[in-house]
Picture 1: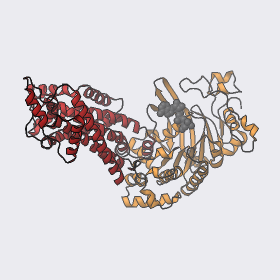
Picture 2: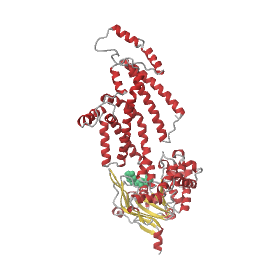
Picture 3: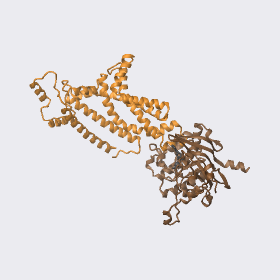
Picture 4: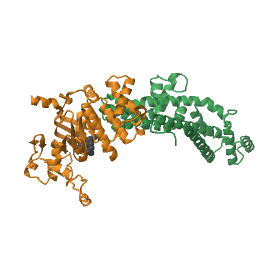
Length: 329
Length: 306
Ligand SMILES: Nc1ncnc2c1ncn2[C@@H]1O[C@H](COP(=O)(O)OP(=O)(O)OP(=O)(O)O)[C@@H](O)[C@H]1O
Ligand SMILES: [Mg+2]
């Protein structure tokens, strides 16, 4: 019974997902046997250094991996159905109705030559078969909901006439207008002013409550993670290396990489002298073209042993819901 | 908008004055004169002719007189065709040239844009390679080589189409192709490149992520952005059509202004050459203003203020 309940509770279940980019220099394995679960209504944070595969993970869920990338194998269960088995048309339905996405830079994410209204109503007209007028009214409602005053006027404006924060609000309105089960937010505040960042995050959380939307929050800002997420997955070179609830992560992170990330946050209480000696994880992310044999983190890890060089550590559960990929912790 | 038009209008007039001055100087710098013939003309006759046409006055005076008359709409009379005023000549011949240029541009856009879109959409497939090959071919054959080729194949060998003149609709096909094909090729390549860039843009990913169909993504979200560079290229393109039409009209014996222009240069028919240059210049200036207005209409980020 409990087992069943948990299964129902699972919105996204990614199993052994492999994505590769076929580049001139060789094959870059962007995702290597990635496993990731998102529960209904929760906020899952996905953190990791630049290039570790966060965006690729989100685009794989959407089935929108750009050329020259390809999903090589794996399953992506969403609402109990494998998205990999869906054809183009079915997948368009999923994107229009059940999964939405917002991106880092709202300026480039909106079409410069179409009005806000045109872009907001398009999916409604195409997929919800709404009339132009009804769609406009719904669009106005959602703009109001994201805190845009005078939505009737905004609908007629072009993206360049709005500020960055406003554009991200429009993106959120657009994303939530279909009342999706999953909202993927790929660094939604990175491009915004610090003062606006908190507003946008609050707004997302409010609307999440309202529509019971699960959020996949991609970021490299551990501050954002601490503030908004329920659970966190830490990613390194195309694999999840640690996954747990947010409290445990900040209190007792296990993986050496996660600990490195934690130490690298400039702390508000630390004095200036400490700031100057801000910790950085030694070495660089391995190139995805020639990943080392064994654990991908071995070259930068202070716990490295023979075992780490010979085989890859499995994902093992250390305490309830706390999974780690490491031989030595 | 009003300010923009006024400013562009005065800029245009200024440009035309400069063009007139340059042509005036150049024409007099090339050897030979309007009344040179194989037979020696008697000096007195030559003197009379030059006096009649005002060519005995100092050059700067000639230029000022020309400009003063031009402002009043009098571009002088042809030296080589007695009694034919340059204004009448333009009125007679220009429509034919405009028609030819229009067909060529039409062919270029109607062919170039879809081919470019197809090539970009089917990037790195056979469709892309074929379209790119055709585009490179079209760009590499100069129209003065393409025209005779078309005449030989479709006119003389297959006998499908007339080889010259501008009368029946079928007589207009070969000149249109000869003039328009290279431009179609240029537009194909430009559209392809621009489209390839645009479909990588973030807003295209947004549109796809919202579940819109590929057709809608391409035609509603990508094409308009992709055509902006094509639009700004159409200004210079019009100039290319004009120069191309000089050759094409001559080869196909089309009674347009381009053919007449070529003849006038060999004849040193100063007023005709000057007049045609000014008409071409004015035409290019007006077309560029129109392109700028269209651009501002197509791209809401542009405002016609500066
Ligand atoms: N369009 C692409 N072409 C080629 N390789 C790509 C492309 N997109 C991603 N990759 C490969 O996939 C890897 C992961 O990229 P991804 O964009 O997911 O990183 P990320 O974790 O989102 O980084 P960032 O924090 O910088 O956004 C990259 O290191 C790169 O090798
Ligand atoms: Mg990214």
